[in-house]
Amino acid sequence: MPELPDVEGFRRVLAKHAVGAPIRRVLVRDAGVLRGTTARRLADVLRGRLFRKPSRHGKWLIAPTDRSAVLLFHFGMTGSLEWERHGAPQRHDRVIFAFDRGELRYRDLRKLQGLRLARDDAEVGAILRALGPDALDVSPRTFDERIAGRARLKAILMDQSVIAGLGNLLVDEILWRARINPARPANRLSGPERAAVFREMRRVLRDSIRVGRVPPRGVWLTGRRDDASAKCPRCATRLRRGTIAGRTTVWCPRCQPTRRGRSA
Ligand SMILES: [Zn+2]
Image (cartoon, rainbow, N blue to C red; front, side):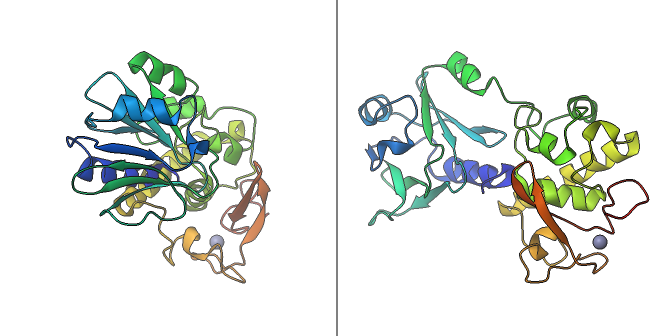
């Protein structure tokens, strides 16, 4: 599932290959990924236009053009943005932007989200209004204030209106590093525990952005969580698995006790 580091990777793909070159053609192969626009309107507005430097907020990629129109991408559970030399499209290439040197392809299997076309910055603001601050930009103080709710910590961190950009793998990895149980109520964390979550969030994001995803390294929870009898990379205790916030959650019962000083 694309999370902040993946979307940052897609932003770099767009920035590297598709900025400043005229869009020759917009081919919508499946209009099921268009949200609030049509294939015809998308092509009419974007043909001949240039993308300007893209930005990202949480899991959204924001691609302004040299007119006021702004294209927004969301990658749902299975989406990606690929740069390809011209050639046969792949099965799940839903929208293709053709340039002289190649093609930018929005590829998505499940089509849970997709592309939106905003008329101007005000419309972009309206689309993104419900999002909390970006996980990479948020200050420690704002982070502290925003995660003070009563819900389970994992649910709070996954909530895009609280902090934008974190998904299932990231949150499990961050909480494992911070040694905090994902089911604990967020408002019961001590100051040092909140500081540990913030610090590990920054570290995990920084390392993941470098490679464009949460890397499945053996010393990371992410690298072990899908093993047959998965063990904690730190203490070799058998990892626990359960559902929190509707998502498969993995944690170490020894490193991440349900209460301070107690094992889960
Ligand atoms: Zn452990």
